[in-house]
Length: 212
Length: 339
Image (cartoon, rainbow over all chains, first blue to last red; front, side, top):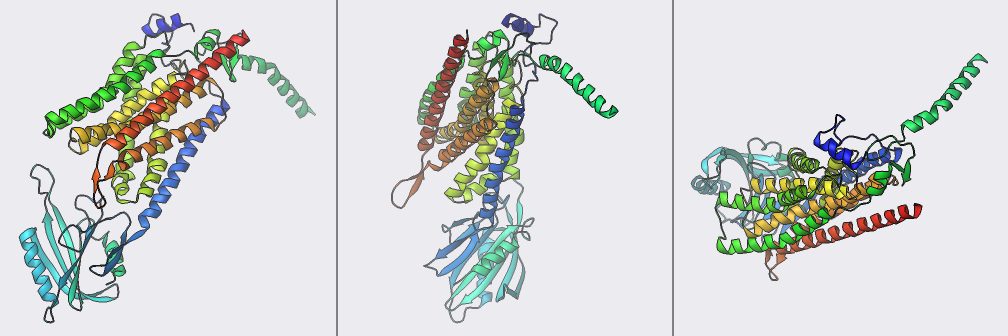
């Protein structure tokens, strides 16, 4: 086809099918093989990448704080920060709308400090800071083979930015209080109600790996 | 015996029809016209016109590309001045500024190139625009949901180690982006009459790549409610450049393979190379921006990633241009020798 015919075709001047983008079925065996090879190669590379990612997802990292004398293993994909009024906070950065998190904190304890004192103190503090904070239950239980005191609570998480349009989220939490000589270690697990149960095993793994 | 004679008869009939069949398949690779006297180059059949044309250059493509590359410098200068005048614009102004940063190079390229294509070069401006839109749609409807929702890579990459980020960028994201860019051209325009020059590979892949890049970074900015003028603007450009670079490489390999029969591993190698480059640049574009301010403090600067990605794009542009020129010169010399 000459370029003139091609141009005429483009302008619709001939009765033939327009030349623009006309499919020419001219594919050799090598072309077909190359076409399949591209798909195979890309799937192969991506599979290797996804396998490595899966291995990374199931791995854990060690958090160690020599000053507080606390070590714990947390999921490799979670983030740790020590910026707040706690020893450490481990958060799942992709959790939405509320970031699933585990807080580790220590409180000095006198001889007469009871677990109840610590829980009451937490309740007073959170009642002032968190919306609709409610204590749901307090009980002694055995968790990962350790005798602990647990406190279930819930609150409503709202975005502090008034221009962000987001439905407030109900967050469930669990405090675990461990008395360790002259201090009390408080481990707090928080997640939105939808994911609380799903991520509870992750919290148990962190708790089981906790050494102090 | 009777059965054997029937088989022999069928075989003879087959032999008799073979020339007719092969003649039926002797059509020009580009225009599909039946060829009485086919010309063969690189194990492909051509009519006389397209044999002499397919190695032609498309000066408009390189000139437009160079102009857009140079305009990046002007754009960055303008962003810097705008940042000095209004460092913290409000939401809508931010989005408008982001839209200009994204739109000027990509849509500017599209407008310029479609204006300069005149039809004599075999490329259809409408197809160039269509591929730009197709690239854009693929990014919005397929790739972003896949990477952000299904594979949930965004947050996970931020939370993992730099080595894992590098591997994920190259093996997952880079390969995916390169394959999508390859697929857009390979399964749409590659086998059509409008792909009549080697250099059309780069033309169509660039169109798809720029549409793809503009949408990727546009949605990135929208999800964050607009980015800041200087850091945000440079981040958007930095994130768009790996797609443009990958599209140049994919286009080069598609252009070469279209007009010459290549070994089966040629195209996979090209896509893998484009994917690796795209992945490395995506990684560099974010990782290099985390700079050390002093021994104890880290900071952020949008410049290192931007500079590296611009350099990579410039090198890729120069390499693809040089290699295509070389291939075309060799082809023309061979054809001249053949007479």
